[in-house]
Length: 342
Ligand SMILES: *Cc1c(COP(=O)(O)O)cnc(C)c1O
Image 1: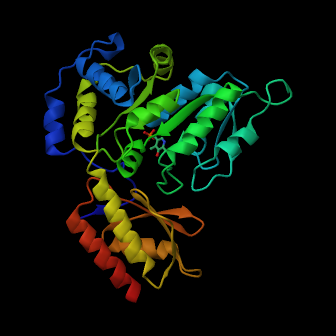
Image 2 (image 1 turned 30 degrees about the vertical axis):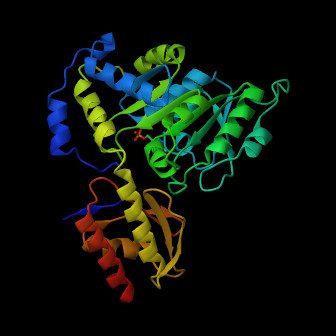
Image 3 (image 1 turned 120 degrees about the horizontal axis):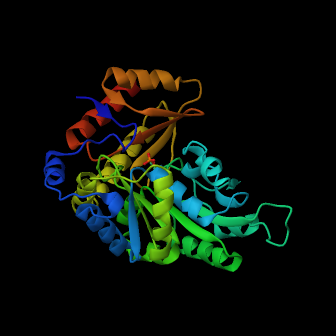
């Protein structure tokens, strides 16, 4: 039994999901003729109370498309210093859009309206890049799965409106935030110009993300997706996995959150653990005591078939997910304690 806690992207489709995928009706989605893709897009647009949605092969492509749609070359976007769009999308912001990033020193990956207001370059000051977009992440990835207070997002939206900026949500793990806060996705639809969501993280689909927005923006997104090579053909088989995931795997994210919290509580009692960061969702970041070798701990866990990852600077990361089941959880809890007594 291998236990992979490196990421929530490691899940494999269940038998039920595979059966559902095989039964999908498909067509050529480049001609907008795949009924299952169309159904998925309508379903997600409906969930957010927005006009339209578009299926993408990856979250990166959905985010990059949004950035392209909201900016012109030479302009600048505002994001947290740990933002996925800046750190983990291969430099796509500059490659695809010719845009620079003004990075803010947020709290666990989250920025405030006051910080955004202070970072906007005044349009009349033509020496500086024109600020045109704000990107936030919910939950935050490198911030350890932290959830925004929606009131802060409303305030950032007001700053955007006052300064004529677009507002994009990288909602790769928005489902986790919605489960914790019990908020309605429609509240998010009212705040943002565009939202990207992933099906292939906690929801357990093998592939897929969507970009959600108004009709005109999604119509323009079609060309950008084509340029990026994301126009796909009989992709309803994959969209079906997404529909299955949305219908079956959202509420159960609460289990992932419970297990992450239990792991955090167990770790915080161990003598070799320096610090466990606050756990809100399915991501757990902790540090071992100074002088201890975090790579040795990773190796010791690996010998016991448990895989976790290092984030650098002595930080370690555990991510719980759909394929991390209760028997594995008990075994990991026991193993952590046993390693700790040595
Ligand atoms: C995973 C992730 C994405 C998208 O990643 P892909 O691997 O391209 O699907 C975007 N933003 C955040 C915060 C993520 O964690």
